[in-house]
Structures are given as structure tokens and as C-alpha cells.
Length: 135
View 1 (tube, helix red, strand yellow):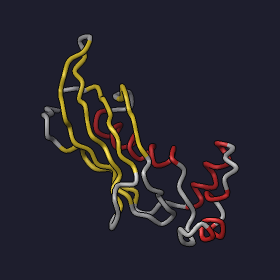
View 2: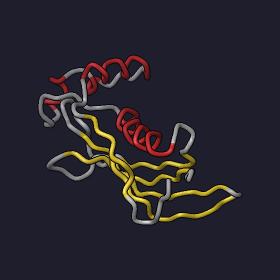
View 3: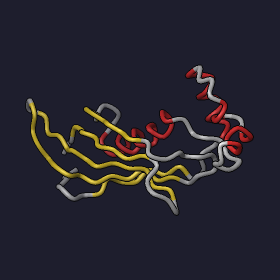
View 4: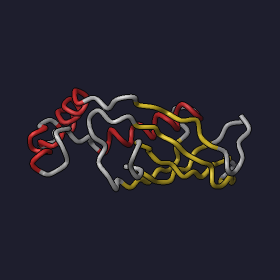
């Protein structure tokens, strides 16, 4: 696959963030924060009656996008910010754009801006990734 600076990374979609996955992830992570399974707590905080997706689940959407694009061993570096919550029921789309192509230690790398889109809001996740590029 030929890639160039300015190319878009193929999108990865989650049509509806499911609260059941949040409850399961809370148990796996031993995360005691009730915002991931108790809508009443989130509503008391003023964020509506939907549960809050864990940061690692949101990050996994970005990882899924990169893996589908360049394979399961492609990620060399990823740095994310989480400026907003992803909520149960949200439809999100992982997106990215190549900002640089370079070589390091004989490996061809693509530096990318990556983000998660949700209709009607600023990106709830945004960051940068370095990915090994195979042609």
C-alpha cells in the first residue's frame, strides 16, 4: 500500500457504544468508579442519564483503526488526550491523517494525527501515533 503525507487513514466505526461493555471493562480493570455502570450517578453530575465509557475502551477504537489499516504489530507509539467523555449510545468514528513519512533504523514510519469523532461535539479523544508502514 502506498501512503503519502496528507492521506486519510481508513475510518473505524462504533455505531453504538454499549453500556454492557462498560460494565464488563469495569470488572476487568477493577475500576470502582460508578460512572461506568450507574446512570443515576452520571445524571447527578449533570451529564445526562448515560454511563461514561472508560478511557481504555475509547483508546481501543483508535488502536482498532490503526490495526485494520497496517496490521496488528504496526503501532510504534501512541499518545492520546481525552478532553471529553464518550457516553453509552454514542456513535463514534475513529479517524486519522498522515502528517509525516520517515525512516528510522531501517523501518518506514508514518506519523499521524488521530482522533475520535462524535456528531455534534468536539473530538472526545485526540492524539498522535507512529505506525510502521508496509508497502
